[in-house]
Image 1 (cartoon, helix red, strand yellow):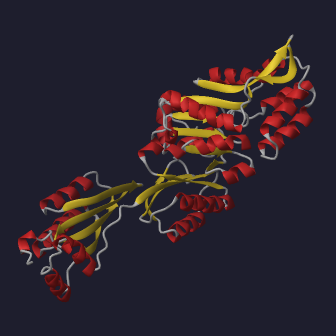
Image 2 (cartoon, rainbow, N blue to C red):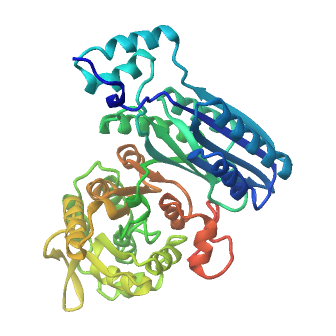
Image 3 (cartoon, one colour):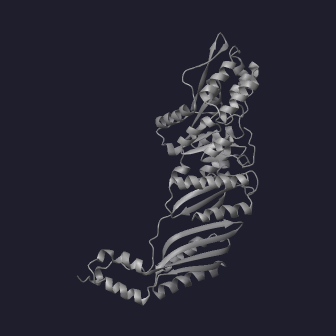
Length: 457
């Protein structure tokens, strides 16, 4: 069957792609004038990006124009005129899809077949054109107490390039120095969860050598639209381990502290460790709770983080392997919405050496996180969990963004995301909030959210 020419699929090779990059002193009207020039030439805009640094502009525009000579000439003339008017330098990159005569002849032969539906696809194959694959985007966030060095950035770029990632955008998130960066990277390869986990391990190892936290997240609207934050209390929201502080007043500090260390490092079952430590508190007056409350030391940035998140409409919870007498106080102090912890049994004003009710161990922490999310009708992708101990790992793994905060070594190795900075406010950088954004939310200008700032709350 002869296929009439008018029934053939549209020629996929009839256009030329032109990328024009303008650089020079910033001109407020640059983008509008470049776009107007494209419109004058009937060009289609494929992509448009602009960055201004220290009054210097870089504007790149990718255009598609008819491959006819007059259309291309008109576009070049219009863009060159804009560059001259604005006193900007301009560079052009062109992808011209002209078809050699012998390939055209082979296409003519194809047209004589009865496979018209495949003509367009075959035409592209013969001309060596591969259909564009939509890239998958990821965000790499760098957090450092010191200036991020060119050497580290070179090593990072090399690692990403080896995994076929291209860097599309780099943004400095902090206002002073180069300590917090966000990179948007893209890959056209199909990456499995195992591929991503392996890359995260490589990024962790690279960052560890330079004391830089490197977080890799899929770029999506959900990354910037979290709704629930669940925090551990001891050594996360506060700087102490409550049971160790109770033991200090009970005169058994060293014994309890040693058990706590083994439990938080993952070398001892939490339930067993809790039972052993609570037993050592038997006979201690329950009034020591107030002494602990009076001497609570909040982690730098804890109050500011909670205040900022509440202003954004987040729901906040503390889930602790400690005790309700303390978590309820912390909940009220920080304006949290939920608190869960163990209940230390009291009789005649003293501790009995036992707990009552369900023990808040590692699995129960994860279960409570899911319960809160379900109650609030929030998907797990929109949940952030923050903790430091081995008993936090199931909770961190359940949340869409689980962060090991200044955690024990074994916990950092097992977690997907880590922060080793002084202030809890650095969590906000992983949500894409710049220091300027944070200051706006806080209602004043300060250096509170600087990666290296102690931000004492």
